[in-house]
Length: 210
Image (cartoon, rainbow, N blue to C red):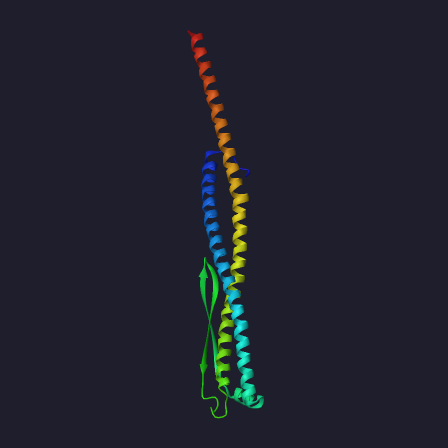
């Protein structure tokens, strides 16, 4: 309970503060629920993308191995050295309940022809496409993991604020308001009794003077 003077001014001030504390609690509780739902959704997506990365890597290395078997490792190395592909990663931002989350967009710029199609296995082109897909999925996975960390940190902070309001601030304000109300009622009763006593004495003196 707060150590404040039991006055009507303080009571009105604390009641107003209590109202805002309750409103703050409701808003933070809503924010917490929205963040938790979004966090669970991102975790589910991240699990899916981890599986997709593993599958895509497996397929990419398989096609690379097929290319090596088909045309020989030395020839494959020479062809790979001629590949001219530039990857670009654009990072933008979106917000969930004020929390900035990254958006990763991976694109490629090709500068063909890299090599002559004569004597080159078709598995080379397949392998290039597979590894491009891997890079794009890994970019999305990185986006999801960073978003999960940021949202989890914000959820933790929000829960701490909600608990502080629910278990400390609001009960303390309620107790203080109740204390002031009781004291004001008690003072009012005392004042009524005092006024009655004064009235009785005045009436008694008036009768004695007659």
